Length: 287
Image 1 (cartoon, rainbow, N blue to C red):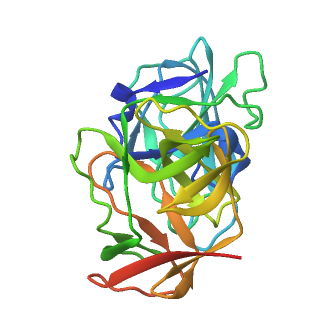
Image 2: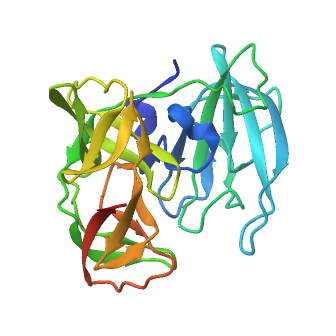
């Protein structure tokens, strides 16, 4: 199983295994790696030899590039698949971790609230490297810390389709990756973890165990601030039929991820305006 170390992940501002609508991320078989906000040059998260690069058509949107790029790297143990980078490397080139490999592109594969990032997945060496389905599950070998959140906060950042709250706050910026805490029922006990994924606007998400906790078994309850929001099968989560509201108004959902330097819950709300400084109370309503 491919594993990304803390040294690799520490070069990125945040990461997510599940926060995507695409099947490539099912069961955490791909990871999105987000650089610092102003970074335009993409650096490789893996070492290997460039196997191929291809220009691929992206979904058509008014404000995004019509084409994306697929970069394949032979790591020796597997084929790494990278997307959302216009490559400056060519087949046959050797690449080390951290080497520049191209520039970020924002394409029709991105929802409006998604920032530039590298999409990374791994295929077995004997499998068709151009397909995403059947990719390998990815593990992250980095300390994670779960932050309790009571559903409240003030808006500190506002975009056209989202806002970011000041809570829960990163307790030790730069020292570890943090995420929103969840309790996952596991028989008569509960495991601690962090949530990952777009809830409930993407079909499912995931949770990552912290503090040596075991992953859940099949069909275990996943909770947010004590309210059940989904069912876990291992680390994969299927969201329940729920509605997220902010100050009583329905919003698209919550974006869960793991962050290194700063943190705060991200509300996806393209049809609702919240202003910087506004106090927000988020609630979960079950159908």
